[in-house]
Length: 174
Image 1 (tube, rainbow, N blue to C red):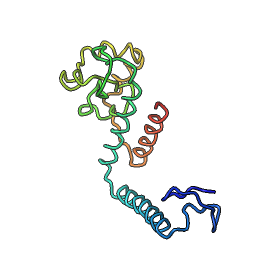
Image 2: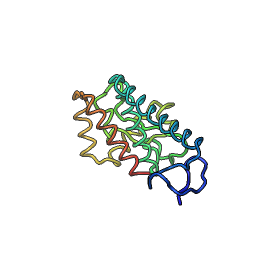
Image 3: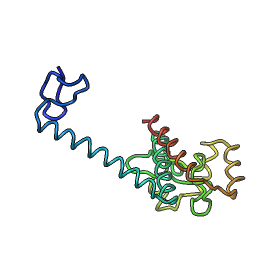
């Protein structure tokens, strides 16, 4: 006996062991429409992905990266003021994204930061700079300072690869 995906009643499969609905016409039609909707949604998503510009992909990467940083630093205090990160908080960059776009996706350059410090105090960079070497180590801190002006050019394939990478990391943390 199997349970119909539509009406939830138990039935004996007649056609195949893979049969998902009972033999009522309304269940069969309803299930076929549901499958068709899923198929068309996948096709629409694939079409959207084909026409997306690099800037859209870069924005998706930024969202994935920030979500990972927030999840990674969820149990840590704010890097600038040492207050616990509760509610809404940001993924704050030490070297700003606008001035140093090559460090935008560098995990050592980005840490959980309360909204007060990141948005209202413009990053609270003095306190950030004092606590950053403690969190990432002096060698990594000097590496960041050394590479801050090096160019970074990501191809579309590299951007897509990084999106998948940060989504997998985020999933593993949750």
